Figure 1: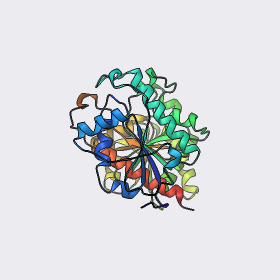
Figure 2 (figure 1 turned 180 degrees about the vertical axis):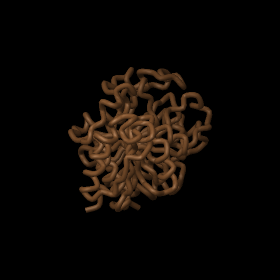
Figure 3 (figure 1 turned 90 degrees about the vertical axis):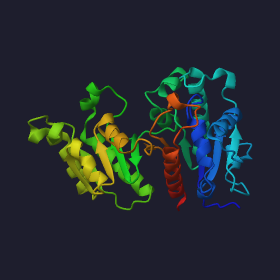
Length: 339
């Protein structure tokens, strides 16, 4: 039966040459998935069939003529399926980053964002994509997050979050050369990143998040003798956030703060650049992590790992991160339905 309280969550198959179709098949084969949300899968029929074949499962779906028809379905016990034709099977070379694959991913994601803008879906959860393939296929930005932000007309601060279980991370700079990371540091960007992850954790069900802010330099700058960014930028930003009433602390040396977070002292860490947080999170649980696109008007999540071209088509892909990404999308999508 239908349940109007269930969020409408759109799933996509990701890069057609990678493990995405198999991951989605494994996800939708889990009985509890359809009970958690009004799920709609968008993708090429041949690719969906191929994903089920590789995963060794058969998942019944209910065809729908458009994304607008999903919310009013009389019965949501089966995932809805919106078939689209974005790429021919003969064009796809398994385990290869190709322009046709990147263009396919862009088209499906744009369909989802169009539906989000008109209120037809409440969250998007996409299987892994390949940035190089997407740039070959028409992506004009450094990553998909910047494409989402422009497409959705976002003018405020946005950034990627990475999550592992109850631990979330944000970063002040992302997909830029490391030599430019210091120039991205500012009190305003640190405050924006911290406020954003704070609000997002609240949307995911944590009423009063505990957030730590990482230092930039080795040993937290050693009181200014090993870099002045902590003294002149990060510490003042933390004090200003505390004055707003946020449960924020730091800056902490980046090589030890993840130990405190792992032990439950903090639920989020704001890092200063990409690898400062990514290395720690992926070492702690590569097959579990999720990327959340923060600061957008619709929740968008994906596994933190990539397309795994090296094992694509072999039936070996681990769907744990895909499942975690789905459940976060459900929680955040449901929160957007709350009056």
